[in-house]
Image 1 (cartoon, rainbow, N blue to C red):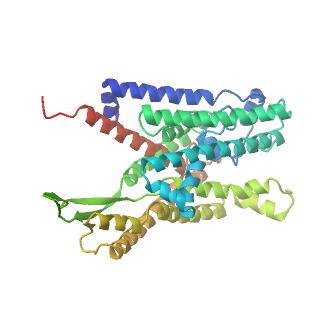
Image 2: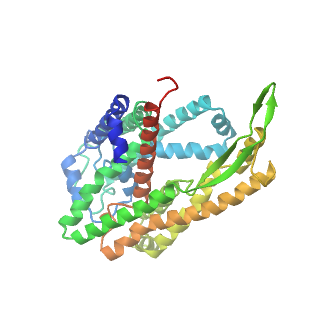
Image 3: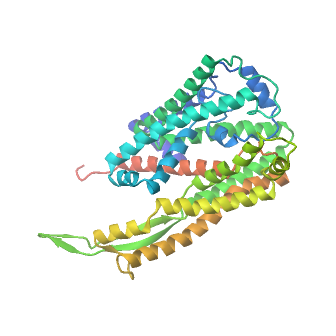
Length: 430
């Protein structure tokens, strides 16, 4: 990896792209510290310092690099765009028009991207309104008595909503700039920046509390889990495919052998995000109930991150969403039809329905192993908090964190290697 980056900096074109990407990442981090108009930044810092329990908004705060709890102009982070992208993908199953656009190629993809942008802005307005309402009511920071919004007049509230929504639009634009003119996927790199920026400060805070042994254990656990994730994220089942020879005029086509790569984890980190989001809803609803009621007390006692009902629900939801999302993104019938159309077949299986049934059988077995892998990676950091005697807001990494960081790192290095091969490719004439 280090040699790839060293070679990239020695190539003028790649060096320019890398510096551009680093500049965008720096701008993204700078916006995370600029407070939104009307927010008392000193009161916010005191509330963050006095917060002992894990916030229900920790997932969004993770993807914003800590900007959400600081109520900065980039408080919403990349989360509205992620949610909009997932919704558009899910709507392909419900709305045939979206599925037709997906099959149209570049033109249809551009239309779906436009719909994603509109939905991102709408979700930005909705989420900024919700977070500002939580901040005004004092429910964003548990146990904090400081008033974080100095001026809560209607014009100022509307200005805050406008600024946060505009910040979401700027983040989306920055991510697209990196994708077009930089290295790697822009949105993924911004998420990577948010996560990596918080890790050193969290480890330092644990060490300053006199738990340097826990810091060493966390670093060792991170390295071990990273090695496992790197190995399994690249694991794939290759299904051989042969194409029959055919004559078109005087030319012969086909007769080649290739394969269909089926990844062990085809759904990525989406199931873990879905499971975490759903399990955050009951405590959020309980906040608006009477603390003396039995159902509120039961949710408060059983939906902490170390309670067994939470852990069991987390594992089951991760399993369910792994199969659900894989079924949406990979259609065996469509793959079998495309192979049949171009004269391809899997050795030992007839084209058409038998090929689709074989692909379904293989993908179900692979998804089972991938789902169990996701459950273990998602629950391991939470289970590690118990022997290390750490609270949920002290643990500097989670299963979602490592999956995103390792996945983005692998994707970026692969793209750098691809472009290095293009720049050092020897032509026919020398």
